[in-house]
Image 1: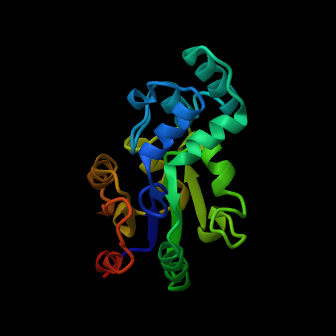
Image 2: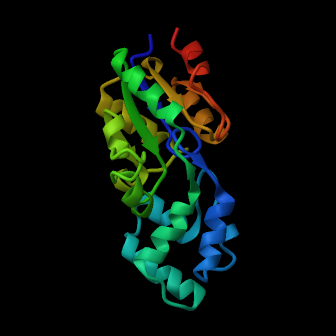
Length: 206
């Protein structure tokens, strides 16, 4: 029986737009960022930031070295936050309803402090609530220093939640992430970025 539901952020809770993020990085003067940015797992200094291997300040400096110009923290935040296309109210309503129905609802996201600067602020839902207000706990890659699709991050969630894999439904739009979670026994659901998964999820909870 499912007791815990672990949601991805980008592509599930919020709709993401990678092209908008790339455009914003180019706007601030960071060219050829396509080779580092991915809808699911970043590489280079972008991946190092989300893995928690470097700080936001280190990222800012390294991006400057990489691109041959200086960037401000505000410019970096502006560019990263380009990933966020919209926050569908139906998704937030469903997360709230699932918690009310007795499920433990957590977030499991590959992300970074620039994204969280927005997501953990009252501006997140446009109604004065931060992302954390919707979840029982947030497992964030840059804080854990682990990233999906590595098995270790899923095992860490199980350890902290004191849960068995078959008791957890993992919802993520990344096929590699879902495959990794499935291998250790999670029940999984892989909706498409931006799709309405709010009714279909209940098929996985019976």
